[in-house]
Length: 320
Length: 300
Image (tube, rainbow over all chains, first blue to last red; front, side, top):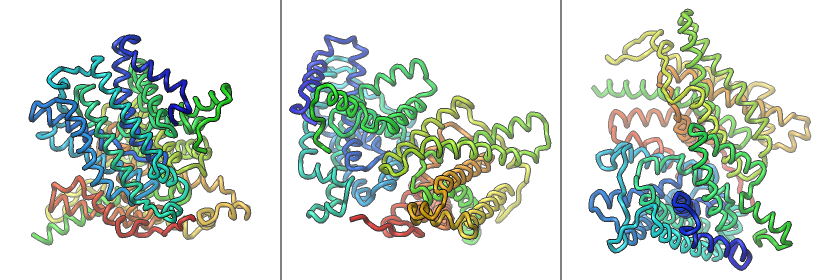
């Protein structure tokens, strides 16, 4: 789960990520930028999967972040990304604190479906109040600035900015999962009553995690808005939430790095699928997801662990 | 004026309740027996709607007696139900019984994604519309407002279908076996009940119900790509309010939601969007197991 356990893949991937603007053509850099902000959003889904909970509505917070940028750009012409990221995180936090208060009471299918319901309300609101939100046309985000200097979504400057933020998120999450609360979250999947026996409130564990996932969704939405340059109601659509779940499952949610592998694989799949099977995008996702569920439930990260365990003789993750 | 409004609300509510019940009864049946929330339910529903509409359009194109269109609707539903039900249960669900809840949800979700695209590939992105079955039966008026007899037919279908299912579970040998399997899978196995067969039959019944709902609701709407997910969320709301796995609960949930929706549409139209979820949240806040649901014991 951390660099000490996996020095090789950790160092190699950090080195590749740092050198990417030199190593790769610009379209791959753009894919990496997208993978990085997806990685941040997917962590909000992955933390819950570690606790055995599934959400089909995480796009709610992603859209919250994206529309924070949209309204700021539309009404005030304000595009200072270093201000908008904390602002998006705060709006995501407020939204999650409100919705989470209801949601933290539910588990299992109720948690999954109520989240879906809330995100669909958000989608409907974004569509219906078109005089504010621009409806299906959405809102143009424009180009992000840092102290007045332009950071276009496909530039290497923007890539490094996203990389730094994704790195901070990964570090923060690693600390969170290593904290008592993180362990209680994991214990949710096994036995809730024993968590309460040991003096912790399950409501608190879920509520705090929910708020955290809202913050991550907000940050990711801000970055996404400036990378793609356009904010549409589909950002809150169930399919967006489905893609987050897909990435968490594909990469494997047992480790903080799993969703990153998943996000890169996802962006590559999307690039090629939209080229060769433009009409069967959902089918591609569904088919891959079925294969993972039936044959590789721990995702790409699990595959990596199995391979290194086999050939390197190293102990795998310590979580079992 | 007051009475007139009340009549309108009640008639609208009953109409919509029939639709909601048809949509959700299969979902609650499958959950009751298999303990899996079948998200692909919406996909089967939409598939039933598509095939039934397509068959009816083809049939009318040949110039046969338009009254045969009801037979075509039924045929479309039965074909989809009998193919999709056993296929999904035998090939996929069977491999994940006993796995974590989120894995089961994700599996049926994947099936929904695949079904949704299959429909787009087969029937394209244009909406399919067939209104003959709807207009054929003519209209009547209550309180100076026109209603279609087809909607009365829908109410009739949902009452008959719901009654049949309740009879099947309460009054037949098959129903007793199902109840036994629900209560204790292992003991049922030990008593010689073919649990696998019960699962397949129950899931197929659920799929049939979904396809039937889609097929007979199709003439009242335009069948467009991607309406499967809305159906999943709506039917989940219905069975969550009524109690997951309860047939009577689905009927009550459908009635509550549709009467509330009809009232809001006529009294506070701006709340239409959220009223379904509002009721769901309120009911679940006071009775987390739903109105007809049983409290599940917590494992220590």
